[in-house]
Image (cartoon, rainbow, N blue to C red):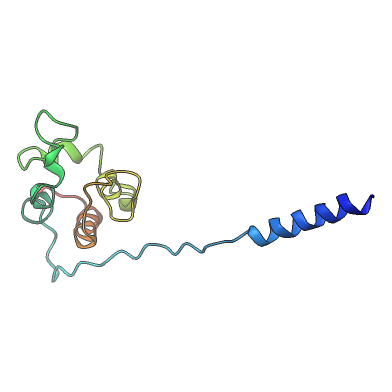
Length: 129
């Protein structure tokens, strides 16, 4: 009689060990942007990402959700709170609509090229040029 509970415990333990699986998570590979030695321009390269098509400004417009990403207000709205030049990869303007981030902005995301452009602009100091 005592063999049955021990046998049952061994089977459950074996099933538990077989059920364990570890998937290796590879770090995200961020594209590099070849600017030909020229700095990324906020006005001509980054700001249009927000307003192209039905992207960011569908919600983030004047009177809409913060930050206001319309061309007239985008830099003043994101430069202090959403950009971290000391750790560009943690900047909210890069992270939240990033293609790798599945928890926020699931309906509107940057393309990988746009994300790389925004990240490069932040790494260059996030200048209003």
